[in-house]
Image (cartoon, rainbow, N blue to C red; front, side):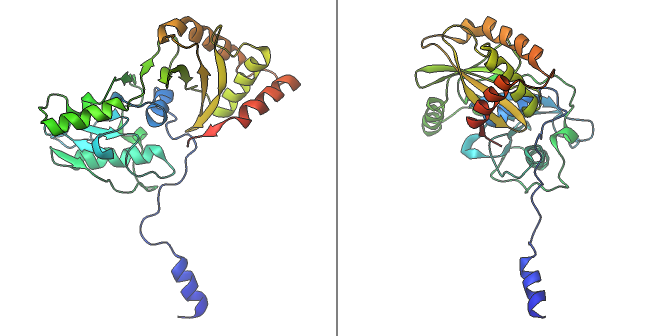
Length: 291
């Protein structure tokens, strides 16, 4: 083998190639914004999805529980009763979060009941996406939990397991799903409450709309609130507001609902004005990309 051939052979990657990057991995699913919230910002939450016909084996479950995290950072778990739980924030990560979850779902369905999966096969471009496995038009309802008791639902724990669960629960950031807007979540960071809202539109369109509101001085949620900036995650934008100390989610239901109406009106339309372009530059300078 010549020198050039040896170099080419050495540079050839071995094993399967990870799934390619997808900017908006959950596009096309009902509740895309909540899928992103489960993947990126929620500490302890679950949602149940129905599988398409033929996806599960004959003795498998018809539904799968999507969870933020599972014990020991397992990417998936097949409980003794056959139920399947899959974590959005556990396991390997490729360029496509949807294929990562799809790989975990398939592996968990194939596992014997009572099996935790410490790892699942690496997702590749041939791996199924979540969109291929679940009924995409079905409602996607997120349940926010105060802790991780859903890990051991219906099970008796010994003293060591109870202590471990208590430690995990103590680490959870208090979070409340709001009703005034889709994918809006109040949380308490330290002693200061915040609201994080996952906007369902493409991140560039959402940034422009938010810039229009910021330039007009209407990007707040009411008196005493301040727009801190925004995250970019899975192709969507997540603005974050700091709230008045001591307030609760209920205090801002009307404010988040009114903001949502203003935001919808600000989408699209004419090109940004000079003031709006300045506001957009300010927003982008403070943005952090999560995925």
